[in-house]
Length: 473
Image 1 (tube, rainbow, N blue to C red):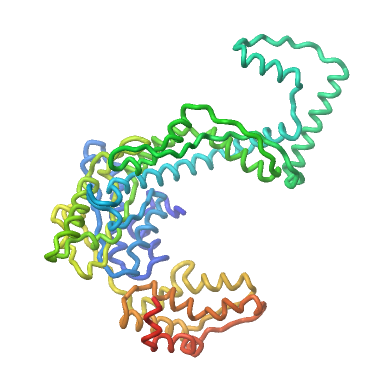
Image 2: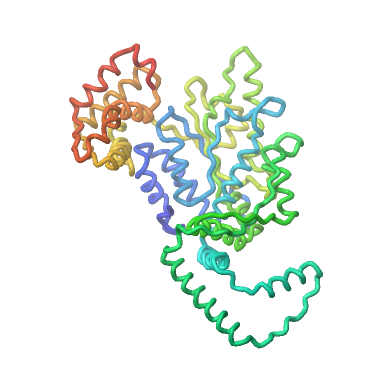
């Protein structure tokens, strides 16, 4: 949800917003806040200079579980920008098995189209609801006489539209028409009050052609998302089919169909392309996994360096063809991340380093940070478990000593095993509350206080048992 207008979205406000979800890492928060604010500044400039100002792409370096992905994801949510997260290890250079690097931009455009379509669909819901109501009333009580419908069908096949002369209605016809109108209005009122929701009705809906046969072409064609069904659906008329369902479900189906008719798909595509180009954010995770290790075995490293070189034009700025049209990547913000434990950022090819000029280091989480993560963020881990158990009418409370004990044991496991950062807390909390979650349905109305003793009884043995830890995260 966008909390601030673009004018009020200052770097300080952005950092403040990120602080509601991510503990610490102030340097990284400041870097992305400045990058986002510079986007707004660029839009205010004349087009001659605005074209020359490119985003300062960011490389986040830090161990897993410290908030790299969360920072980028929350940033995109704040400004409602198209956002995709990809992993560098899924891509390989041309000639190796793997995805085409340009597919990340196509994924970004698809996300942008989805966002624009959802917004435009929401804007026409009122009119779509009115149209769906009329179609539903037609299904419940056809408004036209059979004679008129037959004439319309004949004119459709002959191609001749004869002017229909209005014959005066007899008194009996007038009475029936008045009765039909009154009945239709009563049905409308009952429909709006939900009194007909459980009644079955037969409706006619459109069925688009989806052959689902992929096109065979060069590299990247499968990533275009193009198939025979999509192409033919724009040429051939949509088939109609009749189906029986409840009035409640029929209203939703018809409303969705009417909303789709009201939304101009061409304008959706154009706006989505513009939005992806100007506001898109691509988060490339695990970048360190495609850095050359400098080993004597050249095989894997050839592919790793190939991925980096394929990334170069995309990050620097190039045209990428999508099924909605070409997209320029010049002003898309790329945020890369990696642990860089076995390799260094300097092991990346120099050209790629130059295209990601800003480097921020995220600090490993301390015991104090882990304690804060349990309670401070909105919808923190403890609040999530409290909410889950509240559905069983079980009141779950944690005292301060319990929070500190959980953080202490999590920090200890991170030191003695692989350091997985805040993700360790998920493992700890699930093991801590396993019995309680199992027995909760039989504990309705009870209050459970989790203290340090409760934590030690359930977790200390697992933390101390080296054999058991091999099976835990």
